[in-house]
Structures are given as structure tokens and as C-alpha cells.
Image 1 (cartoon, one colour):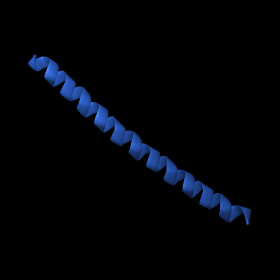
Image 2 (cartoon, one colour; image 1 turned 90 degrees about the horizontal axis):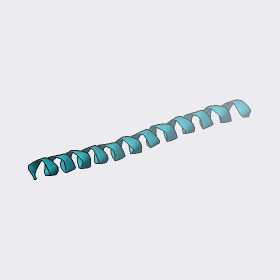
Image 3 (cartoon, helix red, strand yellow; image 1 turned 45 degrees about the horizontal axis):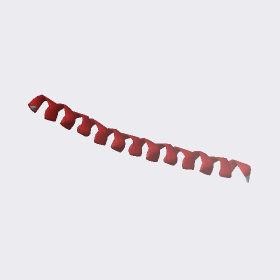
Image 4 (tube, helix red, strand yellow; image 1 turned 30 degrees about the vertical axis):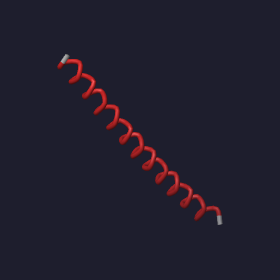
Length: 45
């Protein structure tokens, strides 16, 4: 029984950290896209 609780706790912790990691990655990609867009706008005018 204790092993089951431990395993479920570990999976929950990994799942939550994975969500945070993906959210952070999404923000990084968005910022990179914004910089590329800004750079492109400077060179098209």
C-alpha cells in the first residue's frame, strides 16, 4: 500500500513539473517569435 502511494505521488509531482516546463517553453517560444517579428518589421520599412 505504501509503495502505491509513493508511486502515485511521484507521478503527480512529475506531471505538475511537466506542465510548468511546457508553459515556460511556450512563453520562451512566444518571446522569440515577437523578437523575430520586430526584426522583420524594421527591415521591411
